[in-house]
Length: 310
Image 1 (tube, one colour):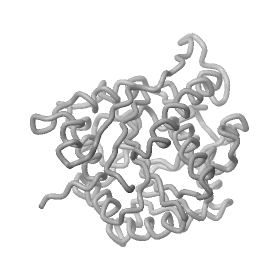
Image 2: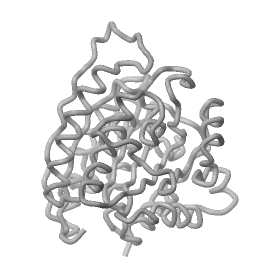
Image 3: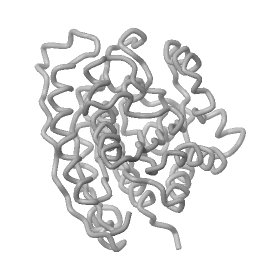
Image 4: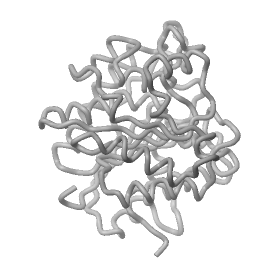
C-alpha cells in the first residue's frame, strides 16, 4: 500500500446463512462507538485517508422460496455482480478495502473481485481465512445448502460452476497460497474434502493453536499466504472467537480463541505488511449481548490496520 488510503464497503448480505441478522452487522459496525468514536473516526485518527463507499446493492430473495442447493443461487449471483463492481472501484482507486459483512457467503464475490484485479495486473494474491468452520462444503456435501458454508470450496474451483466462474477467473485461489486458522467444527464431508485436496497442512485448527500457540500458527499461515507474489487478503469470521467474548454470531461453537489471541493474530498480520484487504463477517447484532461483539469487531479492524497498545 503506497498511500494510506482506506475504502470501506458494506456488504449487507445475510441470506447465505441459516439465521437472519448478519446483514445488520454492517451498519452496527459502521455506527457503533468504541471509546466515544465511530469506526471511521478511529481509522482517520490513525492517519488514514478514509472513504466510505456505502453498501453494495443486495438482491433480496423471496422469503417463501428456500428450495435449491445452494439456496438462493439467483439472488447470490445478482448480488455478486454488484459487490464485484463496488469493490473494483475501491481497488482501482488504490484504496485498501475494509469489507464489512454480512455472512461469509460474501467472500465468494469479494475475493473474486480481488483475485481478478491482481491477475489483471499480472500478479496473484493469497488468502488467510479465520473461522470456526471450514466453509469448504460443496452442494453435494452440504447438510444445509446454505452458501455461507461453501465459499472456500468455490474459491478453490469446486462446487457450483456459476459461482466458481465469477469474473471469468477459475480457480480464484491457488491452494498453495491459502491458510485457514481457528477451525474446530468441521462437517464429515468437509473433512473428506480437506484431505482429498491435500490441504491438511494449510489448516491451523484450534488443536494446533492449543499445542503450538497462536503466534506460531499465524506466522506459519503468513508464510504460506506470502508465497503469493501480490500479497494476501484476510477474511475474518467473528465466530472464530470463543462465544464468551463474541456471542453475537449465528453459528457459535465453544472452544474458540480468546479476545487477546484474536487481536494478537491481526497485530502480527499488520506488522508483517503483506495484507491487501481485510474483511470481517458474521457479526449478528440480533444475537449480541450489550453490543460486545460489534465493538470487538471494530477493535479487530483497527488492529488489522496497525493499531497497537503502545
